[in-house]
Amino acid sequence: HRHAPGMKRSIGRDICAKKARDKQNTLVAREQTSQLLDVFDSLVPQGERSASDLRGSLPSRRSLTHLLEDLVSLLRGMPSSYRSSRTQGNTGNSLEEATAKIKSSQRELFVSVELPSWRIKGANVGLEEYFKRLPMRRLVRGGGERAR
Image (cartoon, rainbow, N blue to C red; front, side, top):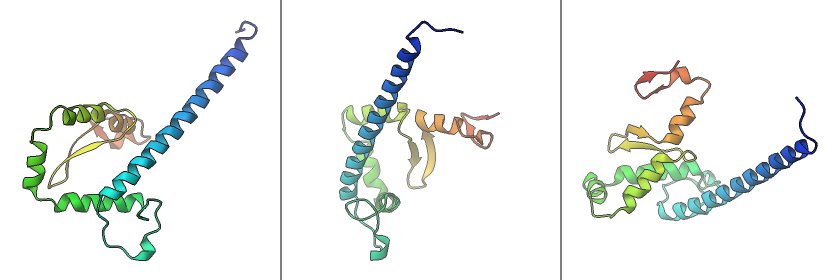
C-alpha cells in the first residue's frame, strides 16, 4: 500500500502535533488538579497525626490519602439532618448542573454513596468505562449483567 509523496511526513506531523496537544492538556489538567487540591486542603480540617506522618505534598503536609481520610471523617461526623437539609435546600440549578457534569464525565472518576451507610448507589460514565477496560473485567459486574 503506497502513500502519495509527502503523505508520510504529513501523517508524522499530525501525530507529533497530537502528542504535543495531549502533553499540554495533561500539564494543564495536572496544574488545575493541583490548584484544586490546595484549595480543598485548606477547607478540610486536619485529623490528628504525628509529625512523622506529615510528609505529603499538600500545603498542610498531608498526603492525598490523608486528605481523603479527613474528608470521610468530616462527612461521617456531620449530623444526618444537616446533610439532608443542605441537599434538599433551595440551591437553584447549579447543584443539578454540577451533578450532571460529573455523571457524564469520561475523565473524572466518580462514585455516589448513600450516607450514613456509605452504600454505593452508582458511578459515573468515566468509572464505568474504567471498569469495562480492566483486564479482569469478568470479576466486575456492571448494569446488572455479568461481564463476559
